[in-house]
Amino acid sequence: MKIKLNHLQNSFETEWCHDSNGHSYTFTEYMELARSFHCYAAPGLIIGGRMVDLALQQLPEEILFDAISETAHCLPDAIQLLTLCTTGNGWMKIVNLDRFALILYDKITGEGVRVFINSDSLDAWPEIKTWFYKLKPKPEQNTPLLREQIQAAGSSIFLTGKVQIRPPWMEHRELGRRINCPLCGESYPEKHGAICRGCQGEAPYFVSDTENRKKPDAASLLTSVPVKEAEGQKIAHDMTRIIPGKFKGPAFKRGQTIIAGDVCRLQQMGRMNLYLEKNPLSGEEWIHEDRAAESFAEIMAGPGIIYQKPPKEGKITFTASRDGLLVIDRERLEAFNLIPDVICSTRQGFSVVSKGHQIGGTRAIPLYLCRDYRHKALTILGNRPLLKVLPLKPAKIGILITGTEIVQGLIKDKFETIIRAKVKKLGCCVLCTLIVPDDRKAIAAGILALVNKGVELIVTTAGLSVDPDDVTRQGLVDAGVEDILYGAPILPGAMSLIARRGQVQVIGVPACALYYKTTAFDLLLPRLLAGLEITRKDLAIMGHGAFCLECKVCKYPRCPFGK
Image 1 (cartoon, rainbow, N blue to C red):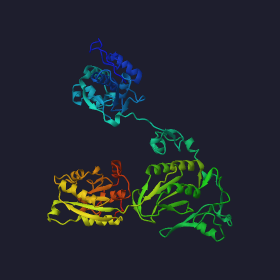
Image 2: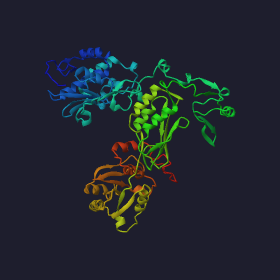
Image 3: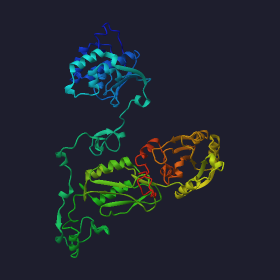
Image 4: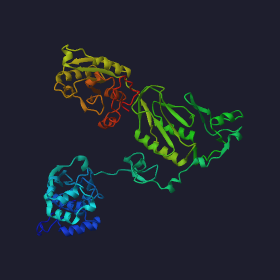
């Protein structure tokens, strides 16, 4: 909006605030305005009016400005009362830091004025301080005295300062393309994910009991038969037998005919009544668990994933068809599992798996899945795989070992053996190893020499800490290395580095790898070999679960580290 300030004739004593059009309000008039809009002349709204006034006075005239409120309480209403900035038109943003402060800023340049309460000044106004710090319950506060002190204090309780709004907050945030949620059917912004945020669990309400009773229940529609009367009939599903600690599996399979000798076995398994194949539910409205699982698996299984049909006990198990890195679309997996009566469970994403390893499974929970739930599940899956195993590239590795103490023969290098063993385990070979001193020129020259030898991935060791001799990063920059991400929320290995020089990937391993058997290097290297780009957000996500327990006997990857 555009600010237009008029020089009003009223004295300062009779004015409390004015709006962006130059209209002034006395303290009493603003109280009435606040009451008509807010239903109550709240102290925060009264103070907020003066804060908006102070910000308007310090803005240049005839500019277009937007507003930010750093609290969701009262202050946004003061902004909406005295300016054209509202949450509805997008000219006011609420960044809920729960600080009683506001900003008015030039929407073109981002230059603005921030107004906030000077905490030190409140000692002179005890009732304002009591209200501001909530030193007494609201019923015990002296409201008339509080209003008197607010009016008497005026602008003396505020501080102002010039600020520059960060670019992301100046962007006009469009909702973008809208689609219908496959669960609730309501429209929502596509960028929110495969299903709407309400169906993701953010809705502020529960579905009523009446709605819950509408949930389809196949069991109530099926007809069961006493096992003694089932002889000669075919059963409708696999039936599991469990011998604790020894066996779990289908003792009877779908379509199997019950013979006289089976009756006793079924009773021992606790099966006194059976569902029979001759009494299936409608193929239009209900889908058998086996058919549902197969339809899900056909979409879920991507490159490097195989599965066998028919399902066993209603479940399809996914298996790796090659060695590689398991990659999972977590957003769609979560969305799929939010749909009632269907599930898919997997191993941890970004795990290194071997050919033949089981990596997950899917099934419908009931014997018959209603058509609507299956349709919603298939809509979430779309036509893109949910799971895939990416092959690890058998890269040609170059190792650059840094350390003046090694070059001078003061100690022997221990890094090369460690790195060679780790990369060999992932199918790579070391093409060349160079040892250089802690000198940025030597490090840069070493990087260029390895690149010229044709390596595809460079591993640098040490020199990544905060000591004055640690200049590995500076040497990498001198060698033309780009896209450097330094520091990762992984312990051990917080000072790790990933980058690239042209098509050659670079990973820096801090000195902690000399002591710990497993570090950030073990988590990051497989992703690089799988051809995945690692972003700062990826690193941030890895922080959850990336704390090594430092077990006396390392059992990685059979442990929580990196998961």
